[in-house]
Image (cartoon, rainbow, N blue to C red; front, side):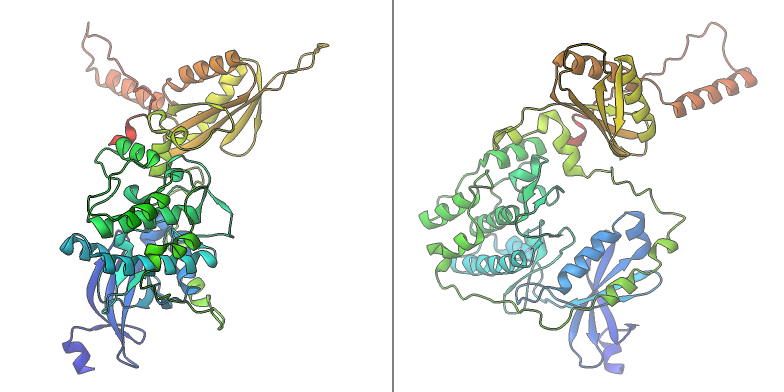
Length: 475
């Protein structure tokens, strides 16, 4: 015990003695620790429960832990156990001493062909193992790839991973901009396996060149480059490397090379020694995962933010902008839907009332699909003619408690009614919210009571901001 304290391991968590901090994130930090029973080193990720709940990340953390528990591969970081206290969650993981792959790249710029190929082979083996177990990482990048003391690669950070059956369509747009696949930018369903393959291709390009294939400080320009697969090979790339990377960087995920095809590639096969994962014969116990989160909601009940399924992430917000809708650049359009998006400086409920009011103005009946989506139909008239089919819907997406996006979609019916509805709703959304009116009334009463209003002064103007979220994403 004295020796352990001299080495800097002073605090205890169960049988583990905590040492220095080796990583820091927004909601967690990672410390080096030693197992007092056998003297082996581990890495312990310490997560603040309160911050996790306030940021609505409980299920994301749970998903990461559950996912890593069922994976047993030499190129995937393993979780040993999870310890929960009233305020903290301790995830005890395999300690990988070589640091991040991104650090190695920052020192050496690019790797030689042999070393880059070995890294890529290990990455593909790990990703293939994950995909065969229904796990799609969705955030593959050098920062999430660790190196052990022998230079072997290990995939980590499954916080954005998805558990799905092969062929299932994913919808959540996530990942890091420079490594994200074109289909994610399109804000449509995508295949998790094809998206991970694209990210692996970006990493391979970076290993061989020392720079990113798609990079720009302007997100609009960056996403256009990704969607069109606009990149340039450095002059030292061989024809074999170009051929493989070109097949990975196919903007159409249906034509993109698959992992089995990558493994069969001649360049990939050079000096290839497959690293095989283990079938988890032993039962995977998740009791410690569940116990770590017990009463987590109760501890933060007073400060928990509203958890609305209508909140969107940055990728979805970016994809909503007309200027950034890049789906037409790389995907055949099967349905010609017309969509208009309007900004709203109102609460979700106030915005829905505005939609209902705009519908009444045009004699449309409203049908609630759920708390955020409505369908509108022309009122039935007693005529001998068959009513033409009309499909008009409005979905409210909550960006913030008093800031929403309304997505109006028409897939059938006449254009005139759709245009009039959009114009009517746009006008209603520009009106002050009820909360703003109450605030103005209060201010006016205060001014009158204090007798500070100057005679003859011009009436104060209260400009209303334009409800246009285009350009918001460029900040």
